[in-house]
Amino acid sequence: MSILMKRRAVLLGSGALMLGACSKIQQSDAGRGLFESVEDWHKGLQRFVRARDALAREYAPEDISPFFRGNGSTDPQNDGYPQHAANGFADWRFTVTGLVERPLSLSLDQIMRLPQRTQITRHDCVEGWSAIGQWTGPQLSTFLDLARVRDSANYIVFRCADDYTQGRYYESIDMIDAIHPQTIIAHRLNGEPLPIRNGAPLRARVERQLGYKHAKYLTGVEAVASLDDIGLGKGGYWEDYGGYQWYAGM
Ligand SMILES: Nc1nc2c(c(=O)[nH]1)N[C@H]1C(S)=C(S)[C@@H](COP(=O)(O)O)O[C@H]1N2
Ligand SMILES: [Mo]
Image (tube, rainbow, N blue to C red; front, side, top):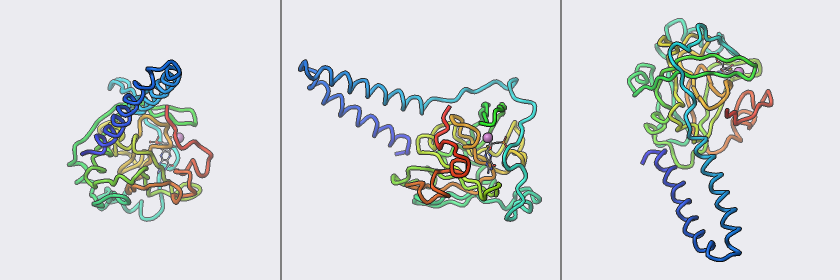
């Protein structure tokens, strides 16, 4: 079973159990109020899950911004990144590690041979600017299926190559966003290989969340049960050093 199907089965299972119990309680008057509040709670849960499942708006080619600016790190100078850039990222590897049955280390060629998704979306940075771009790359769920992510994984951590002002950049998302169809590992922007300022050779697109979640210069993803041991424990660079929220949903 794919992870998406497993999660669906879990949700459907708990819903069915609750409906069974509720139809009995509902038969008494005293039970009716309880039933209604449980039902409200259940509707709320459904709404929440549906909201987390929904697709971010996709735009038309004519909406694409003429220039997609770079923000944060735009030209990493640490740990051999300039050398990788100089040889066109021919030796770049993308690893899938942590709570997986089959750890992966993939070349860019291998990544380009996987099924691809292209989407035109709007990027919103908390600093107050937006840009619309077309992104192409495999879905993160494809990598997680290939590596056979374990049920004990609750989060996916994005590992990056760049040091920003406080140190290495990193980010994380939960499994709902990890398997969201628009969460992709992009290697193209507007049909061209990613420019260095936008995260070459690979960057995450997490379209339901704000700009700082879209980690650039990806060296891999790591499946973990908890974020406690990642960075300072809040799940991301700006969460740890800037007080930003971990869940930056829009
Ligand atoms: N590795 C890395 N990823 C990063 C950043 C960074 O500094 N380093 N900045 C984040 C922020 S705040 C934003 S708004 C976007 C900017 O993406 P862009 O440079 O393609 O505009 O990248 C995000 N991902
Ligand atoms: Mo940002």
